[in-house]
Structures are given as structure tokens and as C-alpha cells.
Amino acid sequence: MDAASGRAFEEFVQDRMMALFGTAYLLVGEVHQAEDLLQSALEKAFRKWRRIESMDHPEAYVRRIIVNLATDRWRRRRRTTEVALDEATAAIESDGTDLIDLRHALMVGLHQLPAGMRAVLVLRYWEGLSDAEVAAELGRSVGTVKSQASRGLQRLRQIAASRHGLSGAIR
Amino acid sequence: MIDDDHIDIERELVATMSERAGALPAPRVDLRAIRRRTATRRRVLVPAIATTLALATAAPFAIGQSGLLKARSTGSRGGQAVVPAGLPPVSSTSPRATQVGPSGSRVAPPGAHGTQPGRHHGGQGSQGPGAGVVPDRCVNLRGPLTGAERDALASDAKAVLARARANLDSAIAKLGDPTGATPIAFSDDVRSQLLPKAGMVVDLVKCAGQEHLAAAQRNAVLDRVRSSVLSMGLVTSVIMNQTSGSLGLGAGDLHAGVGVVHVTSDSLLMTGTLSGGGLLHFEKTFTATMRLPDCAVTRLDLSSLGLPSLSLGALRGQLDQLSAGLQGVVPGVLATDATIV
Image (tube, rainbow over all chains, first blue to last red; front, side, top):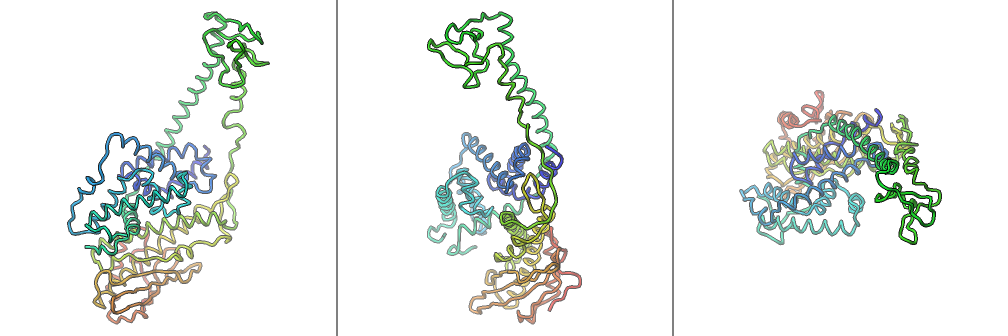
């Protein structure tokens, strides 16, 4: 890699690091794992940087690396540890600060979803991508993205409802 | 406690993600380690692959020459081919390299010779992965902003705005006064009006035949989005807080929205709207003029709020307090010579 490409890579990292870190964090749910994931993804991106920097949206490519790495890790981890949804949400005791509880439950619930479903929700609600953009980024059909988003939200609604003892009040 | 009737899971999910991701510290990314590992990988892998290929091609030939393994003729068509017994043909990676004869024995295709095993590999290897690729130099130029670049910039600005909002919410929450903690809705025109339009002449960098918005200009645009959202957000929050106090309203009774009215090369006029108030049907606007690029508020027009009890001293104090917890915002938000009417 020549010096100009190296500088362009560093600029890219400096500029997009926080956004990519946010995505990594929302995918894995833990700061150190997210840092590790980001580092690995940037290392992979660096090897192909000359090709990536000529793309229209280099960030989308790097984000895809992050999503793929997170999915791989999730698959490996799933073989060893698995926490039931009920068990995970039951661990949260209500202390009267319901909004904080709800958001905490949503984060826990998000990380109980299958990796693909979680990636759809993160790209849709954190990155603000449309269904078509999410589909293009994940290499899936728009129909699959829509159904995964819908099922993911449904799971989160169940969690929120269980937190508040209401089923019909949550849209 | 929250009102369960109003839980919108999608809105809560966005707020949760913004809150959590917005509160993250800067990640520890080790660029030197990335460079080092990539260089090591090249130093180790390239010679290893080259050695493996060389051995794979040369060893059968050497073994055949040494007579350690008895060479046999195929004995069928194309009897020129000689392959060491018990070893696959050297050029078996090429589908054209060998054919299976009627008797099941391997025969070389016309023109192939077992005594020149590395020929095909040599031919491919001489081209190499980098052959024919001339590194492009990047050139700075001025030109119109393309629609695709504008879309990319808009996408980045959206993320910047979301993070700025999350930082803002977090700073306001730390202040502990719930009347100013209602999320502020930034209309879509905040983003769109603060970005250069497609077709506008901007600084570009041309690399590998592709033109992109120059990093400095891109960063300046995104900084403007970030700073204006933080400044206007803080001002709006403090005014909402004071207005709620003046009207005797509780947390969540007032809602605030922000839009952009006018952008010039050195100033930005944003308007804030406060609405709600239950039976009061309160809806008032105020405007803030900010200087660019730092988005310090130079003029704050609160006259249409019609609140005589609004304390300007308290307003300054709260802005000072809030801005202290936020990076990327002018200390105190108000310019030293700011006018408040």
C-alpha cells in the first residue's frame, strides 16, 4: 500500500471510528468485544484498502465486515453459552425507574436475538438504513429483511410487555 | 414511571441505541498493530506460498530425475508423457493438463511434457497479482457534488445528528431536571439544509478514477451539523425548562422541535418551537442566530415567547453548566457579545 492510501485509511478510521464502534457495540453488546471486533474488521479492511477506497461507500463495506465477524462470533459462542429469553429478562428487577428498566430490557433482548435479526435491527434503527439498503448490505432479499425486522420487534415487544405486565399497550 | 399507553417500541429502540452507543468512550484502535500484522502476514505468507508452489512443482521432477521412484510410460496414446509412478501429474491443477485415456491411465494433452512440469505455473506466476495495476495518485480539484456523494454525506450527517442528540440527551439527563429532558425533535431540514446541494461546486479528491468530497470539507459540513444540533439543542432545552417553570407545567407537558430557517456563508438561523401544555394549547417559537463555523449563538430572540419572568441570568448559567459536559460545543453556547431579546 502506498503512502497516500495509508493516509486515506487513517483518515477514514479517525472519521468513521465512532460510528463503526457504535455498530460493533450494538451487535455484540460489550465494549471490549466491540473494540476487538472493530480492530479485527479494520485489519481486514486495511488489507483490501486500495480496492475499498475506490468504492462509492467504503464505510458500508467495512460495516459489512463488522456484521459478518459479529455473526461468526455469535455462531461460535452459541455452541457454548445460551441464555433463555425468559431467564435474561427475569433478571431485571423493577425499581420504579421504568424507562431505564425498559431500555435495559431492550438491550438485553436485542442481544438474545439471532445475529442476523439483530444486524437487521441495528442497521435499520441505529444506522437509519432503509429495508432495501439493509438488504443490499447484508446480501439478503428485502422480504427477508422486513420479516426479520418484524419478528425482531415482536420479540422486543414481548420483552417490554413482560416488563410492564401489559400486552396491548406496546406498539 | 412511564406511561405504558405510549410505549412505541421502535422509538424506544432508536432512543436506547442512541443512548448506549452515544455514551461509548472512544475505542482503542491500534493502527500500528494493524500495519504491523499486515506487513508480517505479507512477509510470512508470500514466501511460504512461493516456497510451497516451488516445491510442489519441482519435487516430482527432482524425484523423477533421481530415479527414486520408477518412472513409467503410460503406454497408450501420446506415449511421450512420463509421470513418476505413484505421484499425481505435476500440472493436475489445470483441467486441461491431463486427460484420462481409454485404459484409465493418465495421458498428457498434446503439447504438454512431463519433463517441463512447472511451465504452466511459471506462466501464471509471471503475471502475479499486482501486475498491470498502476497505483493511482489522488488529485485535488473543484467540481460539482454528485448525487451519490450527497447521499453518502446525508447518511453520515444522519448518524452525526443521532449521536449529537444522544450526547445532548445524556448531558441534559445528568442535569437532573426532568422538565428540560424531553427529547427535542430535529426536523429533516436541519440535515438537508446544512448540507451542500447536489451540483454545488465543492472541493473534491479524485482517486482511482473516482471523485469524492474532500475530507476537510466533508468534516467541516459534519462538524456544522454536530455543533448546530448541540448548540440549538442546549438552548431549546434550557428555554423549555424555563418556560415550563413559568407556566407551572410538569415534565413532558411541553414538546420542542427545531428547524432551519436560513443558512449563509457565516451564519445560521434556526427556529425552535415549543408546543403542548395540555389545556393551555401552548405553541410559541423563538429563533437563534449562530455564527459559523463554531455555532456560538450570537442572537437569541425570545420575544415571541411572551414570558416576562424568563431569567436571562439563569439561562446563561444553565447553558454554561450544560455545555461543560459536551465536547464539540462552544463553552457557554452563547457568544460573549450575544444579544438576547
